[in-house]
Image (tube, rainbow, N blue to C red; front, top):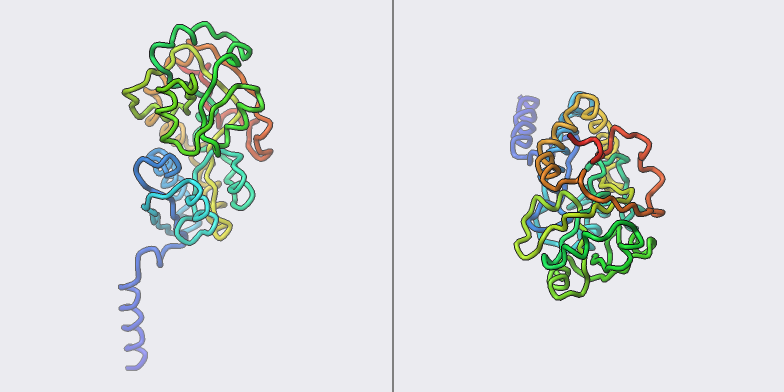
Length: 287
């Protein structure tokens, strides 16, 4: 009788536990609208794909989003701590995630962030159409966020740069002529920018990518994601997901017709798998 009562109490306690308490891995990304550092729809689908493909050997999981609007600095701080946030998708090379988190060594965006198309004042297209080399590019000024991982890349390549402390400030600065080009990652153009034109001639490229950074409190999750992403490469689902989210957009940007300006990136971490060509997007291979 006593054993039966204990069993009943145990079952009742399980019934009232939150779902994440029963999961082998709990993933806590930031999911908030209009925050560039929140997880995107593509990244969330990729996350679920990797977790599902590792379910047989890693067990159940729960994705438990953090939905407060926080600054990028606060987002990183939370992700380092690992309690409210433990997953931070970001461009490689940011000092704090690189130093204090576990990078999953896999370009989740297939290196899409390494190719940049710019927003401009639409009256200036003719000026940019004359640019053919990095020396020509050094005659214009680009805008970037002061803490962004790619800001030092432009500085290293001696491209004149104007920085702003926050993302929103860059748009009025471009309208007011504080700088000429606002290079954006290609995935950004799934949004619409009614007050600006998309520059039609240039494609800026430097070795770069986005990865999942995982809190050091969740090393098993980092290993699980690396395994799951590799399985998505093998079964073709990663390429299919990438094409589903970005295929039409990349065609519309006419990448193969653009003049490519190559920049050096001496800040790229050594663990980034540049030698694995099948993991990287290449505009030259587009149909």
